[in-house]
Image (tube, rainbow, N blue to C red; front, side):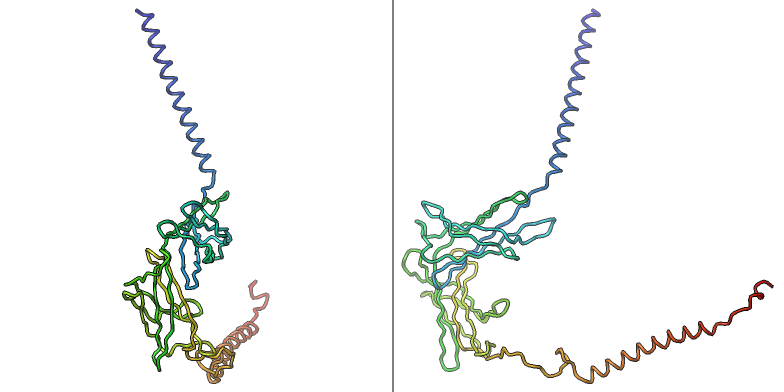
Length: 308
């Protein structure tokens, strides 16, 4: 009876030791794997956004925006090469490449002869940026239908208007697009100024009045822009025209009269400022002078006065 009991006890001890050793080995391996993963830097995961702008000359601008969140901050990625493709029913054709600028934007203009619709009458564009040692690759895509937006300025006496027309040309024929709101803008130094908007009728047309007091260039020219923005079917469309409808604004550098808001303040202000500065610094000089004078006039005790 003792031998079987001793044998069973020995087998149980060996089994418990093996399980404990295996558990320690697994824990060590898992810890080493975790440390190795922590040592490897995480790859940046960028976001590539792609939008299209169909223009009145039948060209299309492909605009890509590349950005990523780095250390919790959304950063625009510059100097990256982006490849643009047009995907058809039978192939994926490369249209060209563009480099992102300091704002992470890249633009490629696609000519009319490069545009081929698929069997559904749509255009399927794709943008791809390759990855590297520190960043993953990214891809953006957009699908739109072919359309055409035209702008015609009309001047009747003192009334200034623009007539805009939106037609669908995806099927090869012009089909008016009704009930679409179009905006009219005037080009400015930074962002275009919106001056009106209107909805298309059953003929795809809209008439919008333009103010007659808009500042223009030295000759009074203004650039009118008609836009359809972020439409689910057609994307973005744009048409423009230059007309001499603005108020001429000289572009010559001329010396402006003295004024509070200019770089040449009035003379009375300069004199007042000079008097105040002289008074303030004068007080400082007097105080410093008096301190030095008091130091020189400080009485000096005789040497034997300290010994007594």
